[in-house]
Length: 445
Ligand code: ATP
Image 1 (cartoon, rainbow, N blue to C red):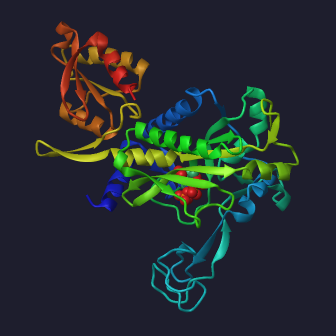
Image 2 (cartoon, protein in one colour; image 1 turned 45 degrees about the horizontal axis):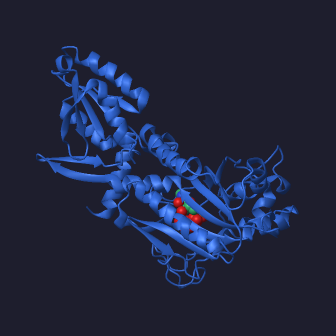
Image 3 (cartoon, rainbow, N blue to C red; image 1 turned 180 degrees about the vertical axis):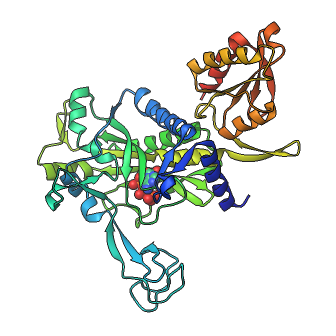
C-alpha cells in the first residue's frame, strides 16, 4: 500500500466511522483543527487514562495538576516564549502560499530575485523571512490594548513550574518527585498538517520531575526507559519505535540532554514524545522573573539547591494518530477485503459488539439484555441490522476486539459465541461468564 494512500484511507475511515472530523466542517473547515467523534473521543481518552494511571496513580512520587490555559503574561517572558518562540515565515506573492524560511524545497534566498517558489515555480516572488511568533494572543478584559494581552499556552509545562512550590508544600512530597498534567496547548503553526499529527490546538501529557543536581543524568535514563516501555505497552509495533538523540544544533541552549521517541509514520520517522534534561533553567528563570525563591531545602543533607528538571512531554493527539496508523490493516478474507483496526483491547474504543444472529425466536431480547449487562462493565455496541458477516466487518473497522453473538443455541444452552477480531475464531462461552471473559482480556494490558 503506497504510504500516502494509507493516510488518505485512514482520514476517510476516521470520518466515516466517527473517529475524527474536520473542525467546523459545514463552514468549509478550519485549518488544521480537528474534532474527535464518538469513537475518537474514547480512543484518545483511553490514551490519556493509561498515561495518568502509569504516571500518577501507579506511583507514589508524582502528583497530578490541572492548571489554567491562561497564565500571567510574564510567565511567557520568563519561559523565553515571547522572545524566542518564533519561526521565520516566507510568503509567495504570486500563489499566496506560505512556507517556513528553512523549507528545504525553497531554492535560492527568499527576498532575492533568484529565489523560487516551491509550489508555483515563480522566481523573485518570495518575501524576505519575517519572524512569526507561534503563540496565539488574545486580550483579557474589555480593552484591546497591549497591557491586556494574554496568550493561549503553547505548552502545559509552565503551569507545572509556577505551581511547583504549591504542590510541594500541599502534598508533602520530597525531592525527587514529579508533577503531571494533561491539557490543551495551542500553537499557531506555520506548516501544520498530516492530519492530527501537527495541529494548531492539541493536547499534551507532560510530566516534570524535580531532582537534586547531580542525580539528573541517572533520572533521565530511568525516564527514558519507562517512557519507551509505556509506548510498547500500548501495543505499538516495536520495530516502528526508535530513539532520536538531539544533536548540538537541535538542543535548546539550556538543555543538558534530549531524546525523542520517534514512530515510523507513512510520512517518515517523527517525534511523538520528548524526554528532556532541562537542568535548572525553568525554576531559575521563574525565580528571577517572579522574585520568589524557588529553591529547596534538603533536611537530611542540610543543603539548599534549585532542583533540576527531567521532563517527559507527549502529545495525546500524536499518540492517538500513532495507534490508528499502527492498527490499520487490510486483509483478504474469502475473496473479500476486510479493514481492521487491530487495537490492543485496552485502548479499543468499543470492547464488545453484541448481535442477535437473526431478529426472531427471542434472540433480540436476549441480546439486548446481554448488551445492557456488558455496557455496565465496558463500552459495548448493539447491532441487529444486516447479515452477521457485515456486522462483524463493521466492528473490525471500529477496532472492536470481541463480537458476542446470541444464536439458536443460546436459549437452551445458556451460551453465546465470542468472535475474536484478529483470528476471527469463535468460541462458545456461557452467558453468565461472557462479561468476565471480555473484561479479563481488555484489562490484561
Ligand atoms: P515538533 O518538532 O514536531 O514541532 P516539538 O519539538 O516542538 O515538536 P515539543 O515542544 O517537545 O514538540 O512538544 C512535546 C510534544 O507535544 C511533541 O512530542 C508532540 O507529541 C506534541 N506536539 C507538539 N506540537 C504539536 C502540534 N502542533 N500538534 C500536535 N502535537 C504536538
